[in-house]
Length: 127
Image 1 (spheres, rainbow, N blue to C red):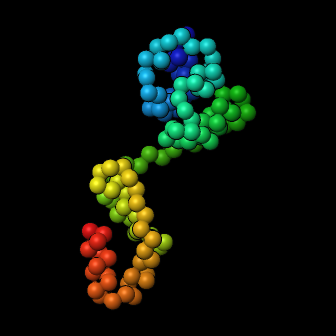
Image 2: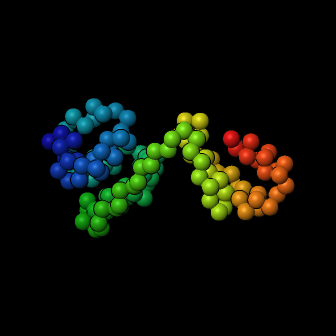
């Protein structure tokens, strides 16, 4: 049985999609596979995956009958340089369309109590 068929037989499609997104060489999906647990162990590096090692370890526990499937991660796509203001700081998500997320530890309530010049400088810098 092909690797892709094994994956689809044992896991819901959204989990198979995550696996496929982590594989560098998609031709392995057409190879003959042995078992779902053997294939999951060698298809990609769990630690380097978007979901992380713990997520895939829980999927493996599910496949071995020891646990429920972990909740699927929420994939949020931010517009370029989306700004989120929180109590503990200011976040710039997808800075400059690079995919990087930056946290500035600026206490907004303290900024409000600063001089006008300081507020303008910080806001200009953030803009």
